Image 1 (cartoon, rainbow, N blue to C red):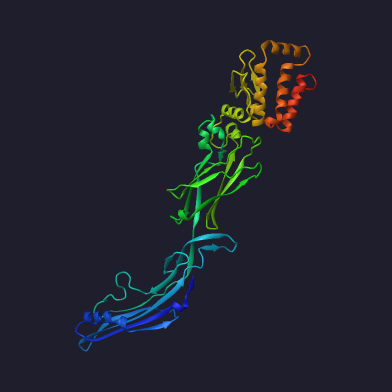
Image 2: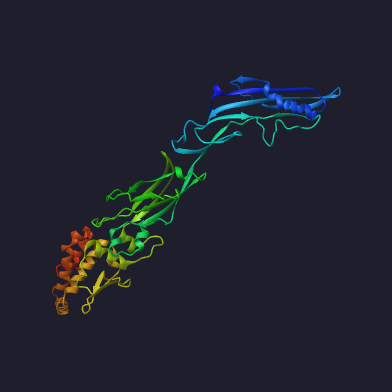
Length: 407
């Protein structure tokens, strides 16, 4: 708070009355006249402002007296609406609380006059015949800043799903909701939400490159915000979980931060975190859509949680495929597994039986070799890692009688 000494001054008022028939008459005259008798003291602020007043009878008549000393203090509440802490942290000022004087907006120009009449007419109230009062007012001009703080609340705990264009091409409807974050930003003191701006401060890790997602404010309620997660590109073969950091700002002042994780679509379905449901049947459907995996020769595909030994199995007679937990190690391996099983769906029963007989006789299991060769041919398209390619190669060599059985 900065006092403007050019417009600050003290004023003394005096009213005096004698020779009246009653105390009320004497006091009434003083109240009418005391403001006409004043003296101003420029640039002064006195600590003993207040009044002395009363009525008294003498020699059969009544008189009265009122002496009032008053300060007029001109000041500016603050030079800016931002407070910077000793550590360099900036905060927006909601109000400037000036001692016993009042609460004001930041950067406000104020002229405080006191003491003034309050609680009715404290200065000019009639005390009664023969009564007197001596009253001192000491104003406290100590200023404090009430800072705006903010709180960010999410309607989801911890994580949301990345957005995907699959949502328009057969995806479960819940993915739309699970990729949106409803945000509420509240302030203390209340009702400063219209000053607040919510920003996406960062998305990490930077690679693979994505955009920030879409963030917008409700047009009717400034405390409500909505965030749609960034789009997971269909061409991105190695998406990773990303942390999205939000910052609540008023101007350049940061009031609060919070973050959410955005999980790749396949991981969200196959390995859900927090309270989201697991749905591996939707996970393999997503893989087929994303990588364009052909399932032409398979009559059906389903997930079997009890099939823990093999990534995929296809019936020789019905061409129905089941995928076990090992198929879901990554979306890339899941795509490769489905491509493998589609080869088995194309193979005739006679071909498979002949291959099994060959294997039993100590020769190659050519039905499996064919399927693993397709996996290797499509390895780049499916985005297989070096370790996945090495594992598939090892199994291909094993069934071709060219290597040991992989661990």
